[in-house]
Image 1: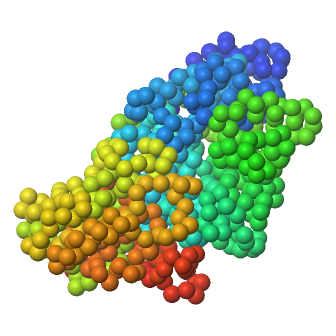
Image 2: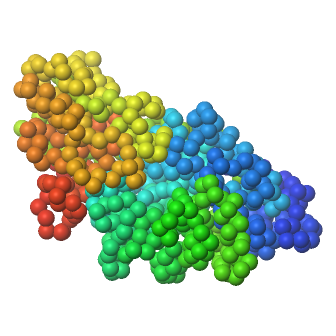
Length: 611
């Protein structure tokens, strides 16, 4: 992932520059021993830990947002980590600017006496989605529809290459939640509603990290959000998962077990509560189940300002800090109030309310991953991977994933596949020619946005390219201008971008008035209507479905819309299967496999072409 000078040069520089953080001797051997990559990882970590002051240890446990620090802050406070929140990007937002930004921050960390490198985290949840020009893969719900763990592993590896090209070494992914209520605004971040699906798709961990940490383009993975965030009552984001421990273990724990078996280096805690207690302060679930019972040896990171919510009041208190750390959180994502966090945690340690053993344990976990990643030897960006960002190879992989994710739900009289010869096709709908809409949330910005936000191929462009020169494709966003001369009309409709919190749907979950009017204009022409539904979850469409000739669930495909066209025209047969149960009515929410309700389409449903 990073390029390094020869070991002899590194050790020589360290011998000259590193000073003891604990007032010990500055002789060469004790100073450079933890920098010698010929030593065992455990030995290096213990030697470094022995030299660290309390201030240095607390610095390693602190993760500010990059906009809220200066290079001087990083060096002075011995900060161990930074993050870019959704939409927190350098100017200009190019891969090269990211690499320059990362290297600048890393040099500031290396200027501190012990020269402990930073680890830098981003939410690259469907590709390196903060970066303009990166390949944007389908969101997890679409990948769950593929039932293809090897494809998901390859996507993880491609994402790791693009992330590595910008210097970043830690990805806050994968989301291994089991989405049990489609009202939840993060449903699309789930691979599916049963634990087996996200467990199978934990192959993305192997893709991101590689066969071992520290190999080529190896990026630390994060299993999130531990645990139960897909099971909150009413599908409320950051809500309360009201389940017995037996049910929590049966439904929500297995994907984390699978990720731990694959060596996931970090785990992020959920904002949600379990039976009224915030998981950020839950000793039993973090120390007891995750670390002791499951044997998780990596480090635990809080969510963004997550410890602030333990007492239900804004801002963190000393009680919340000690509760979170004592419960087993090793690194705290504290975007802006990081100085106060450092002061607070130090005071809690000095007062004996947070044991020094707990601080040392957190540091061992963090430093072990930094050593395993090779950050001490290769702290700066390996810019050879810059060329992979948005590469043709990665876009081809994304197109393959899009095609595999399509779920054909209705195909009356075999109106699909479309004719690639001399066909005359009319395309309409607000999501037909909109990269932002088809990519969804967590794309360039936190909530995502409509419009040409990043390079790619819209679904309309994919249809035009696939129809070929002999075909006729006419587009009108609202469906106006259609007549009976067309062989088929394709309505690309559905949701517009959203992410956590803002994406919750406590009320209606149907198509909006614009979509319904567009489809009605197409139907009025007498032409067969094919609905392509771009959405992060099933929508309430049962009343409308009898009026449509075909329905294709496209989920949130990302930047490679030609994968949708590949299925519409039969270049690839649809093979996707529903990763969630499709409601007959919104009143059925939550609806899941085996709960006795009568769905519109059951979990696992999906048609294919006869020809």
